[in-house]
Image 1: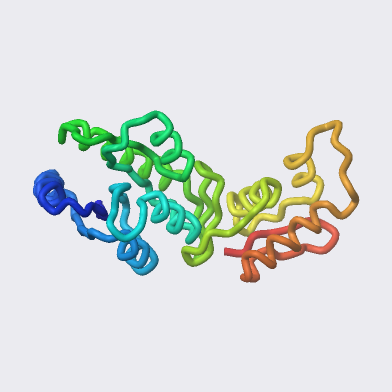
Image 2: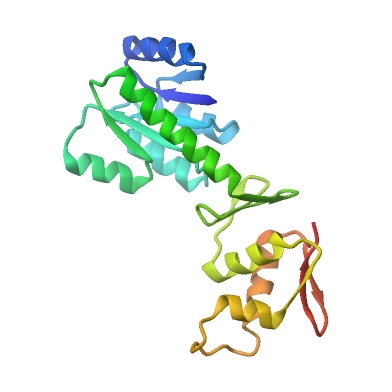
Length: 218
């Protein structure tokens, strides 16, 4: 498990690196937020531990940038800011957990183990075919690591197709899965969703079986 530690307090960072390495983690330490953004773009870590009070940019700005890049890496905020508003702002910005300074190393390890369990759970919820990865836990789709902006119905169609690669799924089956019994369905609703999916995926993996339905080609 690779951890990116973003902390400008050198003494604290050295102590954390020693403790984390002793627990079996691989740690990369950076003391600037801008460097963390570049590092995540080039080689994303498994977990990020992020200080808010960085010298070049606020930690929340770092968090916003990596989330805008599409990174879903769990982020644990470390901060001396212990107000409720600060915690809410950090979590709303995209952090997965918030630990205030000073802290006990045992609590830090417990928080990291919780993030590890979440990562393991999400990985087991992934459906992968070539460069396409569909995650049923967080309802995300990536292609070659790039996060797609995808609607709920598009996600449901792609999930149904990827769960049964090579098998033809009829249009009626997809309509039944997408819409409630009393919801009006336009005649070409599924076709529109399929068309949009193909454009977003940019890969020819959804085949039309004329007069029958659709098939996902792995």
